[in-house]
Length: 226
Picture (cartoon, rainbow, N blue to C red):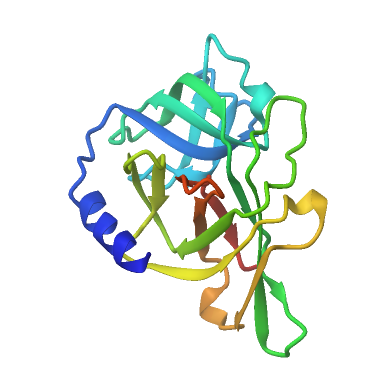
């Protein structure tokens, strides 16, 4: 699996940075008014504008984005990656993602001087107004973590890959047992509490191998060590 991801990284590094239509697999968060006054109502939880570091904001004149808040979704949108002021995604379509991953803010573990990275996941579509369910038995998640994102590309029929595969680590493998609201994480990784890790952005995404042998990428999730 690692060799496959390394090969994929080479493909992504060669991808164009001028794409005008992208698909991202993320979660939506509502935002308030801004000085841009451009109709943006939401932001992508994990993504930032690749040039400016600003929030990647979203708007739509035809879709009520509030129906999809705080749930993994596939977003097809037009986007100018070179926009310097008020970058915004114009959403063309949005659908519920069928596999999701969430990472808690790393916390002090029971072992002194260490942190615990806890991961939650599920493999059931989240529809507006419905909580995510526990995944079907037999699913396996290969959890990948990096310090950055790259412009997404679709790999095979797995969906978009977002994390920077030129510098990623595989955090572990596990069988997801549901989102944070359903209980315990399916994977906990203990690492040294290194001060250099604090305030850094971490990005996590998983390759979900379903019990019917199909594979897809989950949403990408961002968090920091406080």
